[in-house]
Length: 554
Image (cartoon, rainbow, N blue to C red; front, side):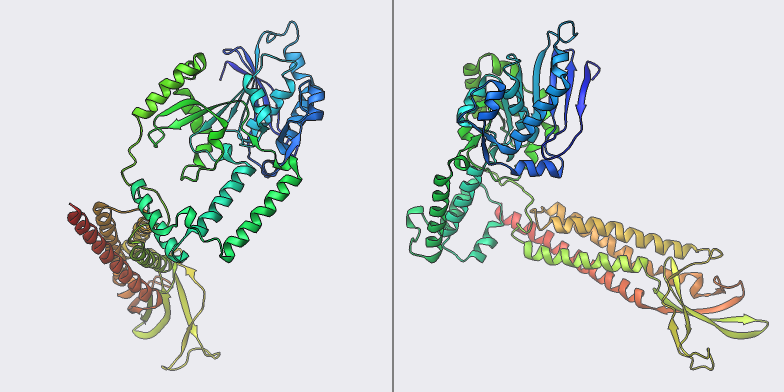
């Protein structure tokens, strides 16, 4: 924006170095330090360095109580590097010096994801020099500060979490809890695991989910404790507990820093968000949902923040929290309907749909081979020259090239029993060759076949993930029927001048009498046509079946 001026930017990338920029916002009257989030391989390595590290040394250097407090070790290393880089360059010293146009500006530090964590530790380190600074951490990692330091930072750090975003919930303690819950759940399963896998592919609403869980899971108190699996699970838990007790620093729990604003998507479609003050305990478990990754994207978050009223939330936390809670209760989404999600092989008819999709896949592969081959038909011709007739060299011809034949014998072609073999070279047509109308039509129908085939391929495989309605199946069957017709019309190539009494387009304009017969690619084209027709018939049957099921339900 024109109102924002770039003061400094660092593009160094490393385990300790990170990309950040310092800008002046003339409208908000603020100097903004913006820190980039995870983008490079080095950033991922820093993300994984999530063991707690004590802040005693940093606290003494930056004039805050760091003894007994812990921070994400990777984020701390980046924060220390930024602190030293800004101090050595004297950037903030010059910006806020007497006589500077930005002397009375506020200082704001922002970041997203890993950059949000780095912004928090930087804000903590320089707050003793700039007590009025504010830090806004957008979707920070869930393991930045220990609980006491999180409470201390509430006066100057505000964190934003979008709905089911997994990153603010990613903490070693939460990952351990998810692992233990998974192992415990396996112990409660009372049916064979392969049956369970087939059953969980179906997407159901909450009521059906409760009934299904009762059918496949034992009650917690009824879980058998004398099995080998459960004994190994108890041994594993005891070993983990002993390790945590022996190393207090690694067992220290880390949380989201500062105050937390949770942006709750009440409609479930991203159309309306309600912000409310959340507690750290609300993010003590990892939520597995279809949007837990997409909710971490920074671009949609910008639009969401523009469309909500955060100023009211800051003015009166208590009153507006009640206001938001009332709105949330009024706009609760009805979970009684079946939510449509894309889960591979999750439909009830996924077996039939998989067979149909496989047939379509085979058909389009065959069509691709035909379009790019050089052996659609085998051409034999007799050339008339000065009243004499001689055999023209035979060839195999495709849509865009040909494969000339040569005599198999070393001495050349002699006699009527000459054996010919392919030259094993797909040569393009010579410049003198001009495709006639039938050749062009065959090429066009081959291209149309592949285009319609790609559409059919995508739709057929989506049918294994989504419950298609009658209209969708009918649409797919119509596309497949058009594909079948288009595949059949490629055989118009047999009406081309190459297969009639006309001229020799490859050598001269002498009159010839030609005869064409089906070659390898022609047989493949016929097989492709059969596959397209079988797929069309299968789609028609599925449309009929779905229609009957719907009529019976009514």
